[in-house]
Image (tube, rainbow, N blue to C red; front, side):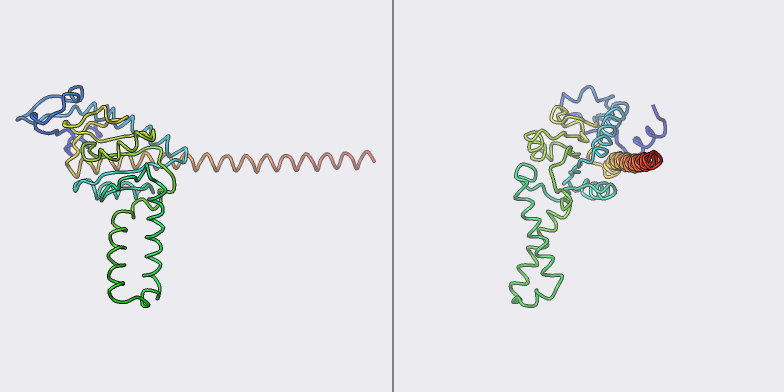
Length: 261
């Protein structure tokens, strides 16, 4: 097991769980022990979960599919936004809107409305409205921007969602399960690991812990995107070579025919 990674995880406090009185018994396989009534998460299990999640997310990204990053609790909002932005994926860091996945068409229509409002404020059209209407439109734009800005690039349903704290994000998990979307989650000792497909046992209350795990998954997505770009480039080169070869054969055939005449 990689020593530097273990050191990183411990320094970020990924191994600290909740108070023993708040634990979920289903988390027993992921718990190393107890210290001052606080459960200590087995870092080996964290690394196993991380490696599985990284491998899967890399495959998803290399296939050109989307990964939705979700973390609406105060500690998770900024790390989730940074990680998703770093790999060019959509995110939800403010509030999960009911139907984000199951009522996708309606959510897309709201995004169209946001773009319409931005167009109004971006030009001179806003001056044609009364002060009262301008104020109302401004409030609407701020609210929609806060809730929808992160999912602008969600132009189709994601293949997978990464969640921080399934207890907090039950609605998003429920919608993903209904649509057969794979769920990856950072789960603390008070969570039910059976709620998600790929659990990563770890501290879901520490900003440093969330930042580290989210950034590692973001890097995996970027690695998958790079793989896809290389494969696409090689395929394009192969097609050019094939086209060039066909043209050369045609020329040779033409020369042979001319010689025979």
